[in-house]
Image (tube, rainbow, N blue to C red):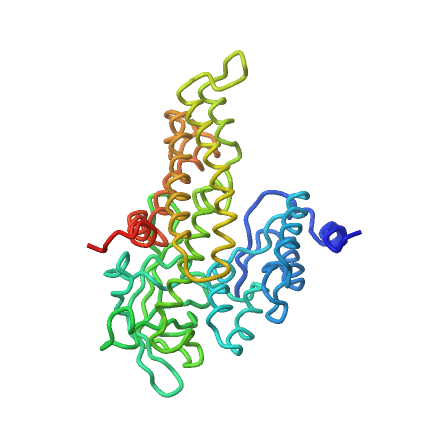
Length: 398
């Protein structure tokens, strides 16, 4: 028996023994944190067991709490989890964005302090990038950090900060070199949200949910030791982290969920059959809709293969425009998926409340609205096209 075959056998046995019954059903994913909330006791047990194993971050080095798995071993782990319907144990910006950046840019002390906490789900991280006057032109940010002894004093405002009202800490871009060119005067710093100088205010969305917040810093403090990547070197860290964020968001084109965390109960073809009817061949009766659904399915499969390559490129080597390409296509592809759902469902796809609509129909409406934000967060589709035009096509800035 080969090493990989042995690993598969041992993994299958461990999952069978340790994955609780409730975690083998579809449902929400825990986000952890200092004040973690779980929808079911099994969810907490599953997070603890996977965290101890390092399998919340299976490919991270074991010295930082990760699983230390190879690419081939991680693929086996995902396959075996899928075989029993095991739910992801942890959702975390720490896993998807901050962790990979820390592995590349942080000091050894910073890695040992922060990475194991991310693996175990002990800290809920949020991202402090965009500001009211600095979104697409992120480098124009004005939130400032001034060194004062062993701390930085931070003043300013961030906006569209996902889950800031629930997060324990924030990885943040601040201006530390006001006299430097705008890209050169930025630093990347880690800030504790639980202090008097930090306040948050949720932003209500049309979808009825509010993951986004305004975040205010009024003489907030962060230790000098929590500056990552060096003073005034934050833009390099920020660009790399944006690649991980854009790769994460682009995966929504595969997941089918408006917020990337879930799929609708029915697939696109099933929804087409249910609402548009079927012909004698048991296919969607509306030929035009059937053709659109078929093309969307083919593009989804091609995009899935492309995403595998993009994921590998993001993990190694220099910054690549592939993440911008994937983010643009993935979010636009997901928007089209929901537009096709609404085309098939007709008026049943635009309900907001009432007995005339099922819970799934109401969820699809909200997810459709949420897809619009997917093409804005992490850099708008227009910004991604600018990146592609300059870095792939070699077009001039002006």
